Image (tube, rainbow, N blue to C red; front, side, top):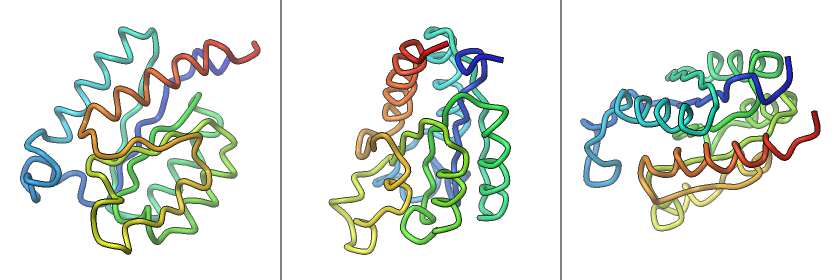
Length: 152
């Protein structure tokens, strides 16, 4: 199956299941289900499929990234706190050999110093931070363009 025909994996890490409840002044009032619905609508508009996955467990995220190597065309990842700590997620992203865009709802560079470093960025084409859930939609748009330009 050509990469363009495989869905984009939208991967969310720990505590993102608490969107809308946890620190809405930082993360907003939208739920993860709202983010998923917006991503599905934007992906359909762009002619893309999307797989959506969230876990609070590092190993489950690594397993899903490994599956993406064959099942998906690209990865959008908000690794949550694992962004700043997980070499395992970085290694899995590198092994997947897929285009990756990192997304953060808040601007991690305006927050605590420990949040300024991202292991995920070392595997990512780019990072979108601080634009709330709209960052996921921008990531889908960027990947749609990249996949359309990819050799068949």
